[in-house]
Length: 204
View 1 (cartoon, one colour):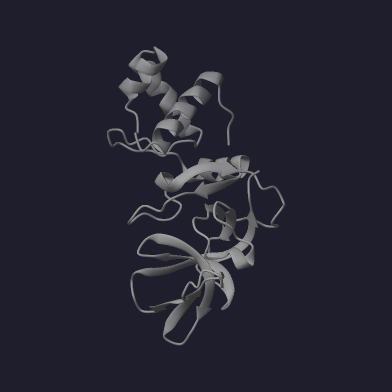
View 2 (cartoon, rainbow, N blue to C red):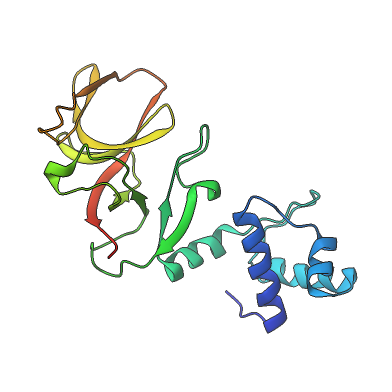
């Protein structure tokens, strides 16, 4: 992608911060924030579009980061850390992303991957503790018996996933707590296999 001037970079960063808060700014708000004339902001945004950082949109407050820039930013920043999954939203929706973490080559190839913060102790026998972070491959496929992330009614859970004939079994790993295996019919709309867990780490 084409390089940006210092002023264009500042405008882009401001737009990105506002979009992360789900508060897309108007050109008037950008002008007021930077003390610029609205015509200047209009021109700067035009440059950002021409250089591929923003998508074209005629909608009011319709500023949107381009897929090319988002892909580039993802690799530059590391993997997105997903928090609570909001109902009805894809797991990697901007509203769910809390931060980015660079895991380097720690877990091999990390294309199409994200990080999920674990809540609960249902997988401690597999070394996954409450507050740990797991790296998840986002591909909707998983080998039976592997640890993976599954969405049930839009809530993410980490379990051993067993693919059976007409149902999916989600098995915890905490014998001391006595958690029970969850069984969900395959043909229901409230379950979605996100992908396998490829690694686990915790912040010191």
